[in-house]
Image 1 (cartoon, rainbow, N blue to C red):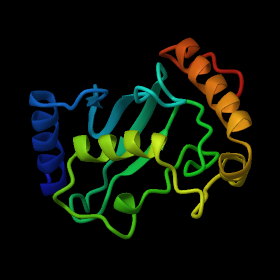
Image 2: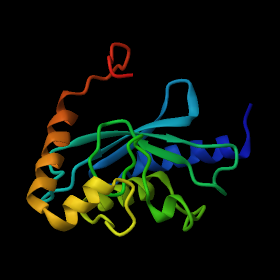
Image 3: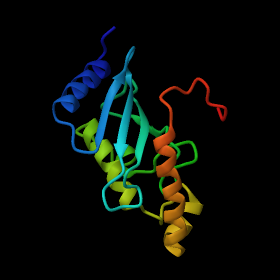
Image 4: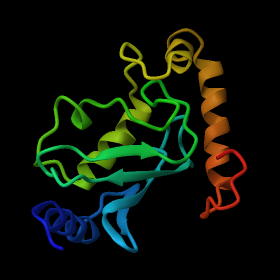
Length: 161
């Protein structure tokens, strides 16, 4: 069944495959145009450099009038990322616009990696370390960057689930 939200998600997929910005990519899962897998590469000259971070993007039938739900699947240590991978980013909440496409969302998240807002934390420990002990913060970020290299593609044998 084709709904306006599903047609819109498909059109956005066509657009992102034609001109995806450097360092981000996304595509629908094999059997569901409303659920996407995405990847963000850690920005150059940041503590996240060389990381390969996986995310999911879930659209509802209210899309594009309501933002999709975007979550990191990869482990993340960042002031604006919740323990469950949810992202505290204004364009995914109170500043959403139907004009934002997947590329804009992923690029904004990639930008957030380098430019966190520790005054609106989703992770208090990360925010405090970012403000008060940048060396320790960067050490914890280095650990998630390294962990991102070792993630397997299937979560079937994930013992922490």
